[in-house]
Length: 411
Image (cartoon, rainbow, N blue to C red):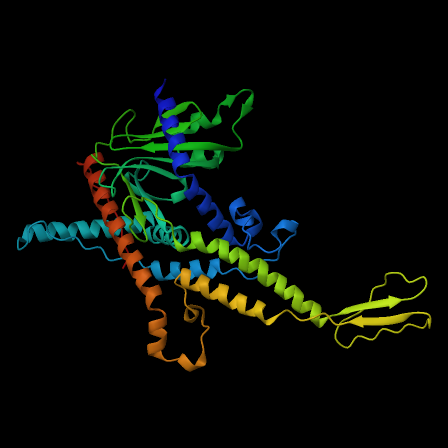
């Protein structure tokens, strides 16, 4: 069995291991974009999903997932401060070295567009509770780069400690034109014809990285992505860091609140849509024309509408539908409250609260759990970036130890 076959076999086993996580990530994305008709089958078969058995299109006007995710993303997305302590306290040269490393890291962040990458990582954390950083070497700029990976495309093997990656696969599908620009080392693999057809559609892409190599696998071909052909990056560690909003022992990708909230929000969407339809029926009742030769006619039932019938043989009947029971409104409030509690998204976060508690102290208490969650996530994200900064400095020393380079930073 070839090396590629061994790697793909390992990837297949890891994809089976993380299948439930991948399904949740896909469902979370569909919920965020409001595409509830595309949700995974396990959510659509929920017995609480009103109307799902009728295969009818549901108007999704009550989606709470997007504002919940956006609120938490906004709280998380604040770039941390870089602080490099001197290796030896009290020594002037050690202090100068630490100050120089800080300036290099700030300039590196500016060069690679860290603000955008931090925003992508914040979104991953708010939606899926996890994000992944991968350090790579940019041959064109001759500096390290940082890639923000979606947790749904990451398949790691963890070390015994549980907090460090031994090796990782990244698997996704992409069109060949984009891949050719992203991986110039593999352009020849993407342009040649196979089986009489050229690669002009989305294809499966697999990237593998461990403590000494980085490989790209396309079909049966493998290509090294290290700076020198056939070289090893010799970092002594896998340049991949997994960041979670909370750390659970033995679980690289712990489930988040959105994973659980999607099913309830799907139910809320369907139930509240049905409730709105029932309310509309009470506003515009049923008009019936009864008589010999009667047939269906369009009747204007809008406010202030007047309909006249000259034929005395017809009789007009109007039926006022019964209004929805009061329990239906209580159920909507109960589900909304449960979703808010589940996602740590208090009413004050969306500007909705009772007038009797509108005081600064009350608002602070209501938002306390939400801000505490954001603070913990920010701290974990900062720790992940600190690890990536150390790997970037190590890459500079390993790949270009005797070269001078220029990086520019803005205030």
